[in-house]
Image 1: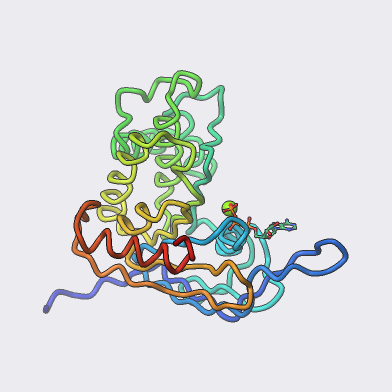
Image 2: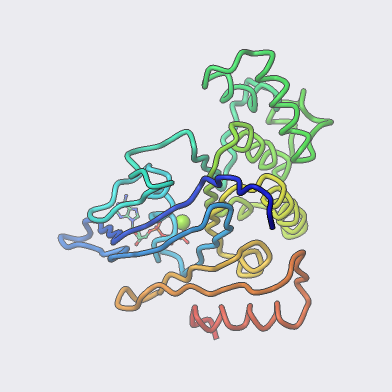
Length: 256
Ligand SMILES: Nc1ncnc2c1ncn2[C@@H]1O[C@H](COP(=O)(O)OP(=O)(O)OP(=O)(O)O)[C@@H](O)[C@H]1O
Ligand SMILES: [Mg+2]
């Protein structure tokens, strides 16, 4: 070793996190006393049946929703609302239709006080990173779904977040585009060394990208489980251990 350790940021600690919602005169417990540690620079995937609480958990990590009990700490600091060290990517990119790709990506940087010339330089770099360099002058209506989502990813990355929170970011895309963008997310995660927390329905996506997979149970009586993805990168979807892990996750989710 010998190299000086670089202080890594983007560590997430979840302690006793509970959340319930009012439902038909009663309470629906979505999460109960969840404890979870996510390392700085880790990629964690969150999977589970529809309604198992994936989005609710991600929204609490983002600070968009407050827990009933427990807390989320980021680099030791309790989360109270949204923060500049976190960026969220939703299923729909939600671009501003009257701005170009460059304008959309630079917008958030300028909103954070970066002078316009610097915002433009950094926006261009990030657009290049997601492979949209030829389309920086295009408006959102001129983009395909996959390109729009790339622009959304660029916008989130441009502010250099420590933590990237993604809620089914590729869920609305066709299978081919999704596979391409999965590979790109893997590359971006590796190059940017960002902590990535990814909600997905797609077990293959979870195994391709994640260091660990958090499986939220269908039945609220069960505890969430963590599964290690101990496969070398870059990962090969057709490799035997990959397929075996996919089978195991399907079993965890009681899909067969
Ligand atoms: N604001 C809210 N008010 C009331 N109930 C809610 C609210 N948000 C979520 N819920 C309930 O909490 C449960 C978990 O919802 P959540 O959106 O977290 O599920 P999910 O795992 O993301 O599902 P999906 O895979 O369908 O996106 C659901 O039963 C849902 O009805
Ligand atoms: Mg959801």
